[in-house]
Length: 291
Image 1: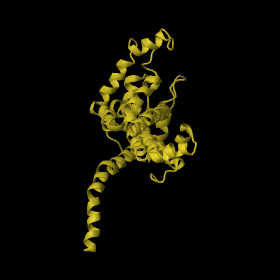
Image 2: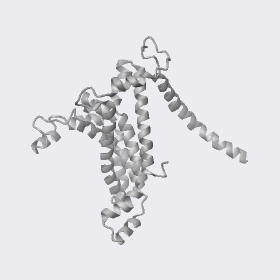
Image 3: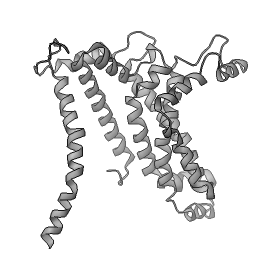
Image 4: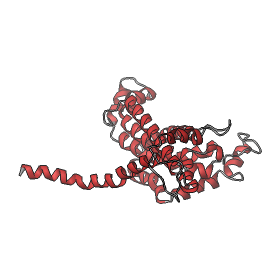
């Protein structure tokens, strides 16, 4: 009986392991192999495996560096835009998650549904909506010009502001849900105890609420930053060539240029860069639940 119970546990792992092997391990191996193909090959003639590690260097030099003084380069654009949008999502998402957890009352479930409601609409359609909202003759630009916060010939489209706004909007639910799950578990009596010990609301928040919600903060920032760094739709629809992210370069290399080795090498560089940043961030955050 004990032997059968032990085998049952392993058998239950088979579907998950097969799924990971089919949709993660094999594509990941293929990506690594493609990044080492002969760069002189083509889609028509095929590629030979020459272990061309120089593809990584050429990918950075040819496609990762700034093309002019007015931009930071696709790789740095991706990191900076994703970082800023993640920070904005954290501020906005924390306020919203806190309000839903402690202030919504019987409207809590409805507000959670409203948070995930944008997912019922196409990602592309939501981004195109921001293109209309931030249009040069739109209400937002006209209002900012009326308040003299934007020049008479100023615009928001084709600027970093538009790209960051699109990233923040599209990935905000990924921040709110983990934050809500973490904040909702906090015993409100602990917050009341901090006020009984003569802590003002600000001190009570940073001494009680914030530390107890750190697992949700770390989870939310990771779930927001990682897909935002690899996104290319927002930069393509809301930005200009100066706001290109590394995802745009990879997409063009795969679909238009047909330079598979360079595209795969750039994908691996982005992946390794994000992994290093995530490991450093998680270790610095010091949350035992995530390690």
